[in-house]
Image (cartoon, rainbow, N blue to C red; front, side, top):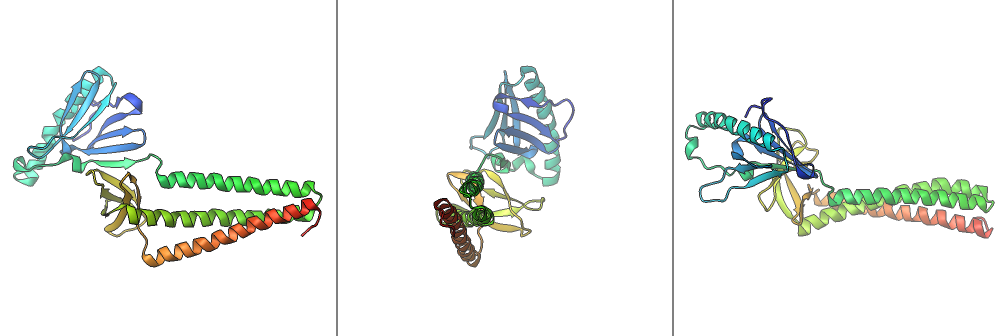
Length: 280
């Protein structure tokens, strides 16, 4: 499909946007983005103020559809007519390349790629961890001010590096342990599949249990990697480490967390001693 200036961009309900690109259609919605290749499209239908993209399906199967609503009625008609006018060009192209394409059954739903931007459980964890670290730093400032108000300048100065290092240890330790626990949970309760490398470095594709193809970001160049995802939230996915690295991570993370706890306790103890006038 070749994009032309005659095909408008449709803006619909809830911030949804449907646009035509050189290789197909892109449906952007809050939290995700669907890329629909041209060869997956059977027909585009304009129905009043909604546009439905009907995908190809094997004989006897119910075609999958994707819909955008509350668009301009005039733009919907122009969009559908423009896309449908270009579909035969791609079908003829494919027929020449495949030789006998008219007898080939294509499952368009399997060709659609979903990229998720909604906040995953890992991102929520990182956001909570960030707030926790900021709260700890605020606690360090409060301890420092308390020690200074008690008249013990030495403790007030000593609390700063002790509390800062304790906060760093707590943050790093919680991150390591949390990351290990997430991987353990997904390996034990999740679904493990094989993800294949795309033409973009670091981008892999995997298919969840519903048949949806999803994008996984992973720093690597191997053509295939194992990926474990949460069946309740298929966008929550991880590439498992080796058993040795998992044991190393939890050991290191636990040690760092222990050191961070000791640093925090020491900063609190010094401040309490300063308030009681006993020094340290």
